[in-house]
Length: 131
Length: 245
Image 1 (tube, each protein chain N blue to C red):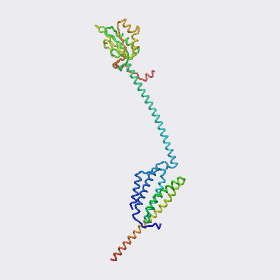
Image 2 (image 1 turned 30 degrees about the horizontal axis):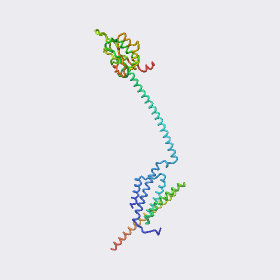
Image 3 (image 1 turned 180 degrees about the horizontal axis):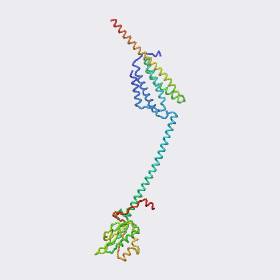
Image 4 (image 1 turned 45 degrees about the vertical axis):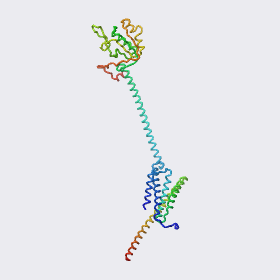
């Protein structure tokens, strides 16, 4: 549970310490890529909760989505169309739906655990009665 | 998706997710930094803002230009003032030097002539005065008798020694022989002024049998006079002098 958060912190520190700064002209593309990455990560978290997580899908989705989103924004700039808005809206909607699913999954998991605990307790009491 | 459903491997999700979170954090930090740079950049400003910024910068520039101009003119003024001050001080210094040599306040040296009169002559004090006058007439700039500087205050006279007859005095002190009169100036002119036919030397020779020896000197040194004191005379204020002019 804490390992991904640790990874995030290390990544933030690494990015800050390296003073990694891309050319200003590509700043909006990186912003879109960051949005796509966020979406992928939330999708991964959701998959974990739904017990259908696949590392390969997460990694490929993370990079491919980021690249395609950045390319879309770039292409939009080329043809004079605000195509990055499409990416922003699409990823925005997906991020919200993913967060919703994570909420659902977390609540369901919590309830299931409670239920199992209660069942275990009841079984133990039943065993006690047998004695 | 249903055929892809598989047995959940609980530990398996942590490492890929961690890796991706790391990548995401890295990208986020990079984007944040780029954005921070961008927000301080003019290219992110709106057009009206840019116009305003341009106007204020232009105003500032004009103001600075004005300040620069005024400072430059001030500098020029000060420089001319400084230059005139320098020329004034050099002029004053050269004037002081001229005056010092004129009143005999400073020792001087230069080419000139020396006139030597030996003791076995009947030299009178007005002969000395005549010689010195002739020297000044022919352009002597500094004159000394036996190393006493002749200035406007120098008194050449004689005293009666009773037994020995008269003896010449310079500022009250008896003049000792041999008398050496040194004059700095154009040596040729000085000697010509003394030796022209019918001049002082000739008349001294023929009338009084005084035989001065004249030598042209390439370098003579004449000492400074004793400082003159003024007890009664007072300098007139310069303003009055100017008014008179």
